[in-house]
Length: 149
Image 1 (cartoon, rainbow, N blue to C red):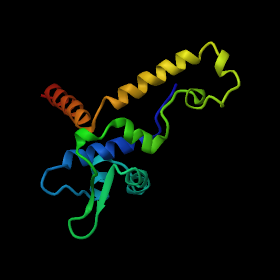
Image 2: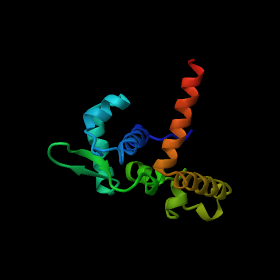
Image 3: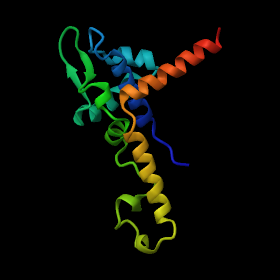
């Protein structure tokens, strides 16, 4: 089974946390608060934030009231961008992205299956913005609260 690493999963949660705070007065959030909110080690978040910053998905703000904030509006950041920054190319098998990876790519009976599945996966993640993901998370939270009553 193909799985995202913890870097991709936790990085997406970090970005959703920043999106929740975006435009709500003080936009900058310190990593310590995100670590507490998401129950993720601050040391791990310090590693994850670097590629997000390099890929211009987050920006740091220095000084009092500083921390991290999204580099663009939540509706302008796609989940695919986050995963690309943290996981690299999103493909099920190497030969889909690199035709020289396997000498049998041209005659492989399963190549088109993997290529089609990769395109579906990329399209799905590219079709979801952080704003969309917040709405999905909000629906889940409302449903959970209703079930607990």
